Length: 171
Figure 1: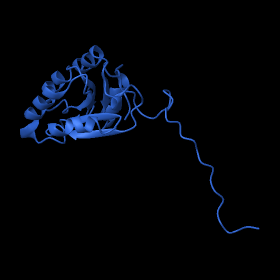
Figure 2 (figure 1 turned 45 degrees about the vertical axis):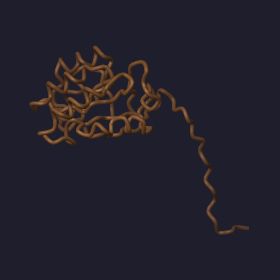
Figure 3 (figure 1 turned 180 degrees about the vertical axis):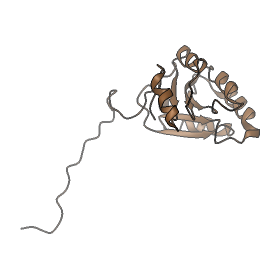
Figure 4 (figure 1 turned 90 degrees about the vertical axis):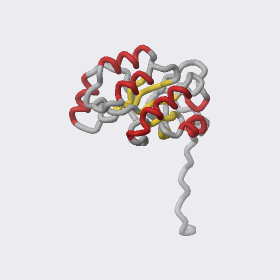
């Protein structure tokens, strides 16, 4: 006899260690001595932290997120961009690896942001409005085994990312 209840669905066993080939997100390669929260496994969660809030950097890295992105672009007012960059430069290290969201290439802050990204502990670069990927940016990423995470906002950006052979990841 039926009780009118729906049959129970079979529960799925969740593998605590996803396959390295799973399409769960980009793999972030970091330097030795990285924190457990930012290891070389597929990143499935990203935590954005404003670059002008250095008191939040360490807390973000210890939050359990797979990757921490320090935002120097939209989260920081123009008058505070230089101070935010200096605060991140003073804090970042291989023991505290982060991904840096730089300002777009057509802004006056882009070159200084790229110089910061050469520092040990910068695991990757989020490039907004990725319509053009400079050779300088590619050199920075290849020299330190960093990944570019391009934010594609236009058809020109789509073309630029597909044409250049770079070490890029998908968000």
